[in-house]
Image 1: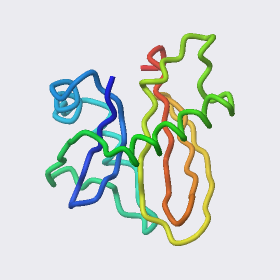
Image 2 (image 1 turned 90 degrees about the horizontal axis):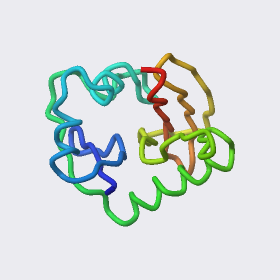
Image 3 (image 1 turned 30 degrees about the vertical axis):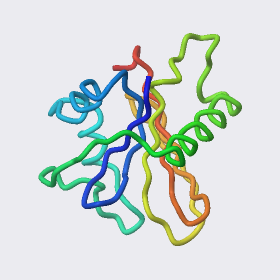
Image 4 (image 1 turned 90 degrees about the vertical axis):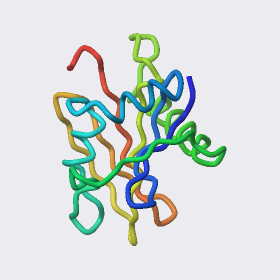
Amino acid sequence: MNTYVAIIGGKAVLTFRAVDDDQAHAMNNDPEGSMRSDLKVLVDTEGNPLWDGKSAIQVREATAAQHAEWKRSLNQAISDGEIDLDAGNDPDEWNVYIMGASRFNKSMALSPAGAHLNVTLESRTFLRHFVNASAE
């Protein structure tokens, strides 16, 4: 598995895992997939959707720093019990949504597709999302 980044308007908004470039692009291009639906409903710190449903979403392999951010988030989620490896949760299904932020903010919301945890670190907000395959 490799770590990829979805980019909208020149800004990285999502770090996710895929087997290869083809799978990463297929996940991005799936009109019924969770990536596009999440990006349409999740909002930035100003209340605007991360994606307007029309703009191009580019996908590329993550930089070493972006992968390291994804890995830190994953390790924290495992430590916090949000991902239970003993229960069969797949760590490669952990997505990190990246949004700009100007102040500390922490909130949590649950949905049928999984848990979302919005945490601001160093003036950047990371929405950590783990999709439980049995919930879809």
